Length: 200
Image 1 (tube, rainbow, N blue to C red):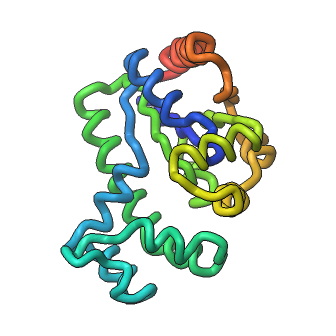
Image 2 (cartoon, rainbow, N blue to C red):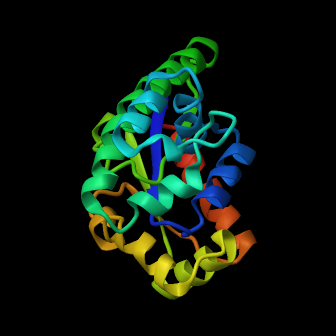
């Protein structure tokens, strides 16, 4: 099994790239999905978030109000670091469990671990290979404002909260331009996937 970390900046096109890898036959583990799992009611991380940030981070039904939490932590490095310290270790445990399940069924699988904060969470040393998806800042801003209904100022704050793409690229085994037209992007993913299958 080959564990491939897929990351980049916010709104660079990681989700599209990850879906193209699935089309090629890659096994996808999505860190966002795992992050939602570990903060469900009854899970320890949810109680830790309430202890750290207050009960008003919960919706009336007891689930996490992700929008409210996002607004509370973005732009505040200490709060964001505190939240990540709660969530990331549990996500890492879930990721390893998923990998064990895949490896048991498909020993030579190429596993794509799609994680926006892979490097920030210092999870990249656990990966066999690292792919960075890039986009220029104007594209990121436009996509982020359209996708998450943010103001330009809020979108800039989200981008600024992440490690600069130039720093991430230094660690990459592969770099994919997330602004390529769809068919060119698909072809580039296919080329990289074929290369990865020879290493699995």
